Image (cartoon, rainbow, N blue to C red; front, top):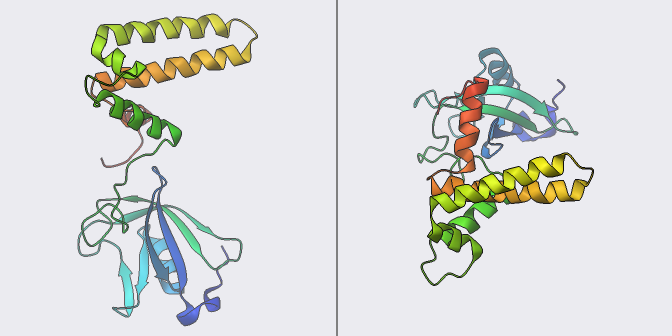
Amino acid sequence: MEINFKKHPENLVPTIVQDSLTKNVLMLGFMNEEAFTKTEKTGKVTFFSRSKNRLWTKGEETGNYLNVVSLKVDCDNDTLLIQADPEGPVCHKGTDTCWGEKNVSSFGFLSYLENVIEDRRNAGEHEKSYVASLFRNGINKIAQKVGEEAVEVVIESKDDDDLAFLNESADLLFHFMILLQAKGFHIRDVEKTLRARHKYDRNE
């Protein structure tokens, strides 16, 4: 891996640390060549601390290490991207990231849709949406809808109408997300279960 340390002042390259699983950005630090070599050797992210004027392994005082999964350099060879598994909060203020955000999995539009479902569930008796009506009808009705949509997916899978298959698949996923919340769960809980089956080595 070729890194151009001399391009930046003090021979330091910006180093972005990203969670290897959630893909959230955890922090930004700086490495010189010695810090990079130590990071490669130990498997724990080590920076050059400008305030301490020395090498600094993240977690050396707290035990909240950043365990290296992969190292990449950008197209100009002057910025590093490290994917890591954090052993606890990353920020010195005790938060998951240095931006004060929780380091949880995000599923893009599906996460947005989960929030919509939750909002409509909690909107109260005057909420007229389809989602709210399902929750008012109870778990049996929601489970029944999931079963009906699953059958529709199976039926459409046997035909050649791809659009119909995708529409029924979307209906199934949507109603399954409602069922998850009716049971007190979210997609991330299913993801966690799948990770455990896959034996993904990650401290929860």
